[in-house]
Image 1 (tube, rainbow, N blue to C red):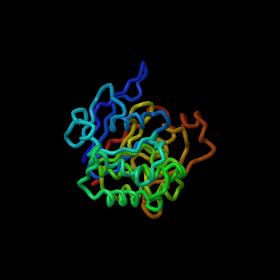
Image 2: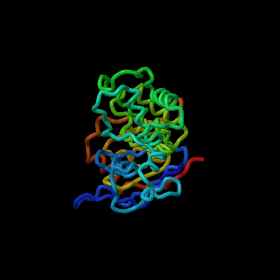
Image 3: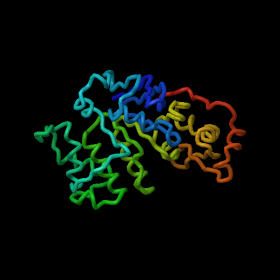
Image 4: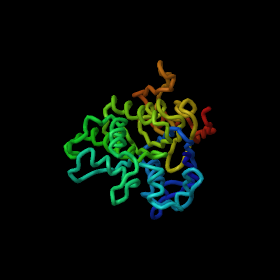
Length: 279
């Protein structure tokens, strides 16, 4: 299912958090949002899973406007992992993941699908099947994150929204979770801090700065030294991954915090890359 955002603007008090953002994630694509802290990534994602109401613009799931859907209708199509996801009660892992079935079951608990099989599959995809039966409150931060990803997968969404899904995960599980999510074949929009992970797993990347999209395109088009220097204030070299061919960044420690060096190397506005859709 396609996810389309058109003219999205979010204002809070006198501040504009996001202005006139447009992006598209086509059926089966993994689309990444990257940018400095406070650039608007989470704000955009909150609008897609209806935790925040935009000031202007619209969000389409397929051809349907999100504003015209009930919460249940949108939850049957779209699932999300937010940065603030938490469980404070002493539920077991299986019980936490089972809450992802609520859009399908309702409060009466009837589920047309084989719920146990769905839950087991979601735990497997998130790399958390070995945690089944344990108390959620006893888990480490990384283990909790994998269980919460499994809860979103248990909704069986056509569109999956992930806000910093690799938080609290070690390197092995960062790669493992993103690989498994990509293999689902569904539409995924994810905010990521790690540009190398974004380049490795995303079909297209949107770069945000101060609430606006400043570049978009394939990883090879977007992950470039001038853009990284201008947006993130870091000097970097790009190398090709020997196995995947994806662009990967090697950061220079000498100019990482040298704003003057960044300005000298890339004066003027950040170039907007013409968006392309991979064949």
